[in-house]
Length: 392
Image (tube, rainbow, N blue to C red):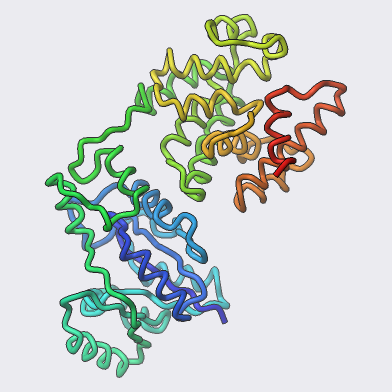
């Protein structure tokens, strides 16, 4: 039977000790996999709580690339106050062949009497306790004995201890103190870009607020293209979280990738004035809208981030040496949920969640086959991108 470790909490923010604890549980054989469960509306947290989506995205960034770790939206998407007993019931119904063990600190062990329906909780999961420096081991072990007497499964894990707390991190961020060695660098960047926990905020990628962008796009695009755009935005966001890319940049590029799609070809060429265009590009709306979209995103929507603009620019042809964000937008455009079925779609969808390069190679090969079947020539940039994979 699979042993699944659960890491629940507000993750406000998630820090290196959280991930360290999960690694230790996996390497020590206490769990076969660990699922992180950021909560949407925890009953014991106060005013310093970051938004649920922000905490979910930080958690995804923190575990991106970690073997046998994943992040669940089970509690993030639930309305009302979140209780562990409800989550455990749902997980048991979803994974009846699994045993669950909650990974907790000694402080949480001492707080178990405050959990709703704790007598039911202890029948649905066990507890794996990791101590923090300075905590009273004797007190924790006495509490564990009392819980075992009530039928609970409680074990202690021998693991190197990391003296890190989310409360201290928030204080240091508010006071402008360094947090190096406490947060994953991607999480710290995310916090500072968005101005969380009293930081100033440095994100200059969005010239307009999302609501204003959506309002304008809805007027510029037809209904089908607008639906497609929303699908690419969310797919790109999820792929970015999986592969350790900035989810806000990915979402913005996805949102604006087709902002010039409903222009006439003449309008597209005019919008891209000053950008070198090859003859093939000038005669194809399918290709030209990406270049025009880059210019419209910059000049109309106020986007000045070169990473976002590049992802919009190359989402139709690709090119040699694509960045990770460019690959994400190229692929998200192909696989978003509202895409009409085409040969190979499900294969590409499956590959996109396994690895970007394998998905890109397959997608570019399919593009070549499609263009050849129509008696056309593959754009030189696409060919260069494909050849790069062929020569690896």
